[in-house]
Amino acid sequence: MTQRDDTVAPGVAGQVAREETRELIAAGKVAGTPVYNRTGENLGTIEDLMLDKRMGRVAYAVMSFGGFLGFGERYHPLPWSVLTYDTSLGGYVVDIDRDRLEGAPAYAADAAPDWSSRDWGRQVDDYWGARSIWDPRAP
Amino acid sequence: MTQRDDTVAPGVAGQVAREETRELIAAGKVAGTPVYNRTGENLGTIEDLMLDKRMGRVAYAVMSFGGFLGFGERYHPLPWSVLTYDTSLGGYVVDIDRDRLEGAPAYAADAAPDWSSRDWGRQVDDYWGARSIWDPRAP
Image (cartoon, rainbow over all chains, first blue to last red):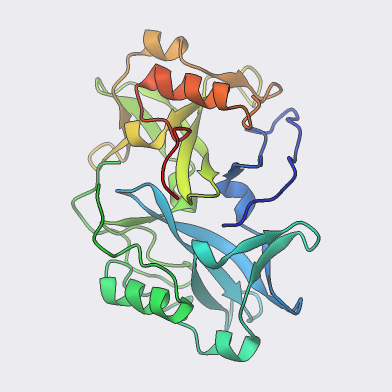
């Protein structure tokens, strides 16, 4: 993920930590952040992150898109590496147009994918052209 | 982090995803999880995760400890690598006794540390004997 160039959020009472610095960001601050494409269209909102337990890496950011009160909402997993934070927009930017997003791997709230399937993960990574977390690598 | 040996949580309506598999876990599922030591003493609860943006890694889990209604509560950053999930306890296990925990790097809610300081991060990693995320490494 591309870094922000500023350092944000002084510690205030009740906050767990400075929520974001040049190098670190709290997971709780990522959730709820809007996602835009390069033309500034709002594509959705980050709902949660899927972490790779063994490597301690963020595997996917799950973005919600469309729907109303949870009905009809679709979830798109985005490889972390395709998200860039834009300070002026106050959200992440992904280089994709809406048509192409509609063809991206996604699921409905009542039809969660089998995250334990490497085929599903590879399908997501391939679509987005991201280096797959499923590739063999040193521990 | 040591992996669980089972696959958990079938997808149900309203859930973003299967929240946990052998390899992946949702960040939102980690928050609120209790932390124990090897004798089964409850040490605290995971509040949030600090992510290393450039590498997309979990740098620290922030554990809250003590206090009442937020007063007197202390936050301990734990390197992700020192946490092991125990299915029978339903929480993470850290190999530390309470006395030693009390000497571990921590901060109060109204005195968040300077997370942008590598000295602070190194102090945490050193105390826990974890490989520092601050060491130089290939991109």
